[in-house]
Each structure stands twice: as C-alpha cells, then as structure tokens.
Length: 365
Ligand code: CA
Image 1 (tube, rainbow, N blue to C red):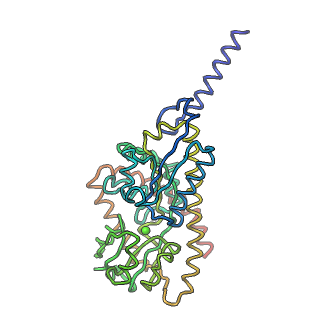
Image 2: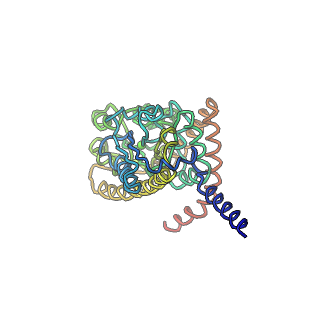
Image 3: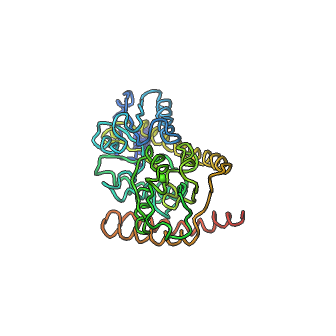
C-alpha cells in the first residue's frame, strides 16, 4: 500500500514538473533560486520621447511588468536617441548592452529583409490577419528563427492598424500622377512607388513637416490621422489620401536579448509575454480610437480634402507590389521562404474573411 502511494506521489510530481516545463518559450526551465532574484533591465525604443501610443505603450508595458512582478523585474524605458540612436536599438539589444527594445521589424530590413513580413507588407494583411498569422499560423516561429542568429527573442507588441495613404500637394488620378513624385515612404512601399515611377525618399519623422512645407517633398506618408495631425501635416499639404496600401497593419515588436531572456525565471517570462499581449490590445485599440477622433477633426478643416485613391490606381499598385515581392524573393532565399509562408496563410485566411468580415461589411453599405 505504502509502495503504491509513493509510486503515485512520484508519478504526480513528475507530471507537475512536466507540465511546468516551459515548452512555448526559448531557453531552459529556470533555476528555482532565480525566483528570488531581482532584475533591472533597460529598454530602448525607436520612438521619439512622448510619442503617442507607441512610446506611451512601451512605458505602460514596463509599469505593468513592474506591478505584476512586484518589482522583481524593473524596466527603465528610453526613447530613441536617449541612450542609443533609434535605429541602433537592434544592435544594442543584440549585443546585450541593453536587455530589451521596442520598434518595428522593417527598420532592420537591411540586416534581415524577411523581417518586413513581421511589420508591413504592401497590400498585405491588416492587424487581424497579421496577428492571426503570428500567434496561430506559424509567423512567430518564423520570426524567432529569423532573429535567433542575432541573439534576439522577438515578442509581438502592438499594431498601428491601417495607416493613411499620405499627404499630397496634388490630386492623384492615375498611376502616371505618381511619376517623378518625391515622397517620403519607407520600406517595400517605397520600392513599389519607385517601380511606379516615383522617387521614394527616406526621412525621419522630425524632418518631414518642414520638407513637405518647403516643397523638398511633394508627398509624405506618416502614420494615420492621430499622429499626422499632431505633426501638423494638414498645414503642409491639402490632399489626404486613403488607404495606406503600403502599411495596412504594421506590427510592432518587443525584442529581448536571448541571454537576458534565458536568465529570467518562468514566472517573469510569463509576465513579460502576457503584459506584451495586453499592451498589444491597448496600442491597437488606442490607435483606432484616436484615429477616428482625429479624422472627425480633419473633416472640419477647410483646406484639407480627404480622398480615396481611385480603384484603378490601387489595382495597378497592387500588381506592381506583387512584382516587387517576387523580385525580392528571387534575390534572398530567406525572404522567399517567409513570403511563401505569409502568402499561403493569407490566401487561405482571405477565404474566411471574405465570407465573414467582407460579406458583413457589404451588408452595412
Ligand atoms: Ca507609415
């Protein structure tokens, strides 16, 4: 009888141990001693100080982690340029001088071209589809593979929603109107504009108002009504176009140095993961709320004309976007692998959304 009881206890203990082993995250099960340890981390972001929603969200995330862990994981957040230049945050976290970063994967397209699928794809999926792919469709596993050589663990945190198409100093009635157009538009969207005859310009957010106002730029995209209004772009150009075909649902990321991550006990890892998910929802819904409010304000402005790109312009840009993706895929096997995965997921997912979301949206018209 005693023997059976001991066997039972051993079996149950083994079962509990097996269940508590973290199978979803990288790194081994942490030392129980570590649960007593305090961690003081730094986070660097790609955003300007006080940047609404994104920097704000990163700071909220740090507060949440501090509160949930009862101060065991304290994260000090620094805006772009405060500790390291915004676009060097990937390197700083990769090298381990900083434990954590927040930004968007397309900033690292020079190092990891395929990372763009984890941020923005012209004529790609919106927030709902992108996050479904990441959380359930294998996107996160691919993302981890892409970042592993850089000693980084990616964790999704935030989405911008559908961005605006941008501010133009003239009307766009055909693709020919994009010819010679000097437009601030980064990433794959910029490549599409170039192939359509335009001149994509790379420029940081702080420079674009002046450049547009002085005519150095003919057009610019930024984020959406909320951020664009705060930057004053409504005073620099008259035509505000939709939709943001180049950034239909830009996903944002938390990056963690993998050595730092491996040192965290499992409960703190769970806190980081869950706080990131909660922050994702907060950021996305905050964008939706504030964009709707800002659009209402923009509609009252005499000088601002809110327009949609003509369907044939969008159709042609979509064809060009497909060519751009194929060309990129032909030069980079990793890009090709992620592109194929993303595309297969999207094709299947669209079958579902066309009969769910789309048919319902049509019923509302
Ligand atoms: Ca943008």
